[in-house]
Length: 402
Image 1 (tube, rainbow, N blue to C red):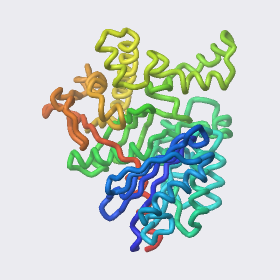
Image 2 (spheres, rainbow, N blue to C red; image 1 turned 120 degrees about the vertical axis):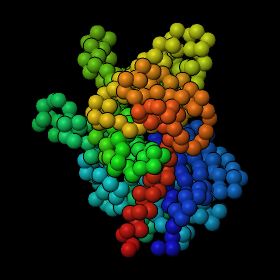
Image 3 (tube, rainbow, N blue to C red; image 1 turned 180 degrees about the vertical axis):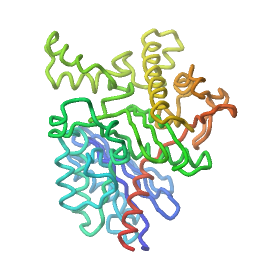
Image 4 (cartoon, helix red, strand yellow; image 1 turned 180 degrees about the horizontal axis):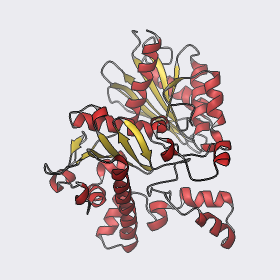
């Protein structure tokens, strides 16, 4: 196959992030973002390989106009949808349910199944679908590949994926733990094994993906056996605006005593909870600054956040039996030394410790931050979900073409 470029599209409700990669050497040929789609003053930012960033306002009432705008920017660099070098488009799709356990070439049946999953991913799958449909229409002969956030977690055993509710009800409404951030967990767990000089099949890794959304996974020999997010991305760790784990009875209590509707409870737990609900900020840098200045609300928010991390580290150590490495990734995980320090504090009995000089060191590459004597390696591994999507997409279309 001479075509070796892959365009990665990540369509959100009001944005499209994109990267064009040359799979021969993983070079970024273009990186861009269309934001505020359907809102006031949409903008497109496009940066080709030479670094000459272009930014402009545009009319983008919908995803179709946004994708046409980014396609025009790519075409201006000779890299458009009709380029003979373009092998495929890889789409991030948040929810694949149980049907999709690996990257999948999109056809009408695949689109229909992704649409059937909209009720369990109402904020994400509709935008993902829109991007796929527009990209298909722009070049009907170009392979479109869906890479699912949930796919990496489909290896969880049934006892980890099932909730303890009535089986018939759960099955009728597809209620189970699916997990999210799967492309990140797959990439980071594999890179952590490489950092240790081993094959993924030889190591057990706990991955902490800590961004505005946050999730943990327990990966045994390259296969996910447990993850913190569930039916939706609300369960698990404390996040920027999401509560994470909470007694479900809280929702019933608020309905009875505060008169909250289902939609109001949804908004509370997804948009007005987590760090922002605790202290009014969801930027960890600002929270640490306030905490250092003696702000009690920030101090409590930080303590709740890191306490939840320690709970999951202990629980996933028990699930795995033995742990070779803990990997911190995503915006907070990669950049917040105080979070990493607090997350492993007091867990020396589990073999966890950080070397403070290594912990505070700033670097853009994967690295170990644990002392040599530690039984469990602690790593900081920058995630690269776009590269993971492109790699899976290219492998699939290359195999299909012999």
